[in-house]
Image 1 (tube, rainbow, N blue to C red):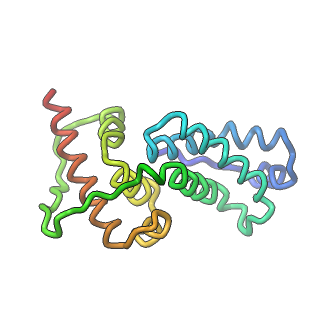
Image 2 (cartoon, one colour; image 1 turned 180 degrees about the vertical axis):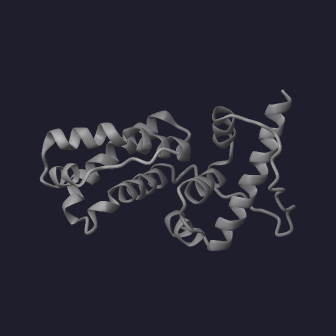
Length: 176
């Protein structure tokens, strides 16, 4: 995954509300923000709304950012929260049997990013949200649970459920 590097001069210019710097920040980070929103929501229109709302909040609140070097993480958190808010109605969490089969972590088949992206988009909304927050964005189960308004154990079981569904979906797609 490509890490976006922002120089401190650009960040200072954005904090100073310089329009050109804001546009430059937008251009450098829009794919990252949109990708997070789209993968969580699986809806282009909602993802575009989240993209816009994220930058509105970033540009309004950036002066309050205590650690400018954390700008990218802060932006991702805003995008994740706005995605959750936008998709609140679709984030339903399937009830899972307490004794579900453990996920086999060995994947010996080759697949590409597009295949994986299709499989992620096919996940139920709640499992997809937990998967994106924990497995892709690196949030802890506690953080993801707080963002989504669920328990830590629900977050953990939804992640295992998502992994199991992904494995099954990818194996099905590879056979096709």
